[in-house]
Image: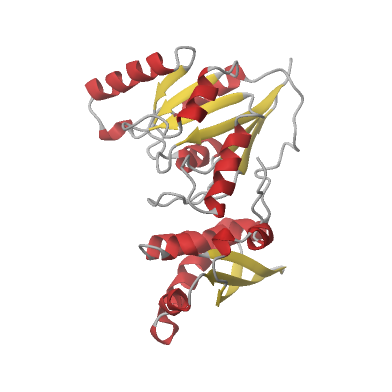
Length: 294
C-alpha cells in the first residue's frame, strides 16, 4: 500500500475559524481560539498520522494589511504558506472573500489542489449557504467547496476525506506520534496569551506578548515562570489590577488549561514587564520568536 503525506496550509481572513478548524481536524487544541482578530500570530503545525498517511496541517495568521512590523511578520507567514503547500485549505465564512486580492490571485493561478471550507454554516439558511458555495465556485473554479461548522464538527469529516484524496505519494515527514512542531513552552505561553485576549478589550490584547522564562518538569508537578510584556506602564497596571486581582485571575484560568493539556499539576508564576514599542522592534520580534522572512 502506497503512503501519502503532505503539507496542508490553512489560509483565510481573521476570525473565520481557521484555528477552530485545525483543532477539530487534529483532534487536540493546538491553536488558541478567541473572537478577536489577530489571535493567531505564528504559523503552527498540527500533525495527523495514520498507517498509510500523514497530514501536516499549518494554521496561519489571518490575512491583513499590516500597520506595524509584527503584522508584517504575520503576513509574511501567510505568503510563505503559499509556497510550500501540497494542498490549500482556504477557510471563509458567510461574509466576504479573501481581503488580500494578491493572495487570492496567487491561489487562483496556482496548480496546488485547493479546498474551500465555508465555515459557520450553522448560522445560515440553506439558501444562503448555496449562494456562497456558488460564489466560491465562480471565484475558484478548480477548487472543491465544502460547507462546514468547525465548532459543531459539521462537515469536518468531509474536509478530512478530501484532504487525504489530494495528498501526494510521499513518506512521512515527522514521527507518527508527533502532534505539533511547537515546544511546550510555546504552547503554555499561548494559553496565557489566550486568557489575556479573552479578558481585555481595546489595545491591551494586541500590545501584549508572553514569554515562558522557566519550565521545570517534575514527576508530579510542573513549575512555570512566565513574563507578560506590554508596551506601556498604564497597560501593565491594568493587567496586574488592584492588589494583583487581575493577574491572579489570569493565572488561575491559565493554570487550569495547562494542567488539562499536560495532565499534570502546575505551579505558575506570572510577572508583567514593559517593553516599549516591541511590535515595531526587529530585535524584540526576533527574541519573541517571530520569523521576519517570508
